[in-house]
Image (cartoon, rainbow, N blue to C red; front, side, top):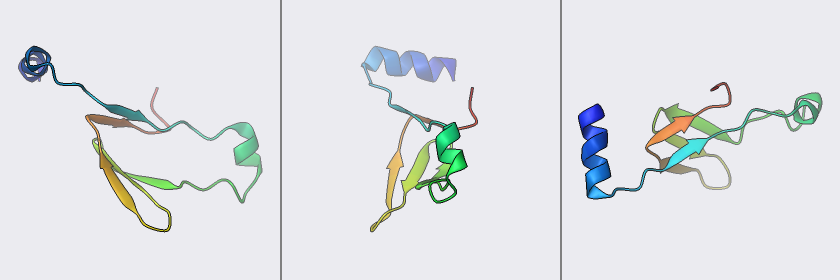
Length: 67
């Protein structure tokens, strides 16, 4: 992993991370808003649900429970 990171740095690749924030107190209090509009598929992709579902890939995805 360290060698891969060093190789990516040498090539100048830009890394893109995604962090999904946890629900706020007011969002948790309102049951109609306490629903995720996305699904974290794995550590590198997520799907946003709407009229049409879109899947996005990142270098890393951090869910609402991440610190």
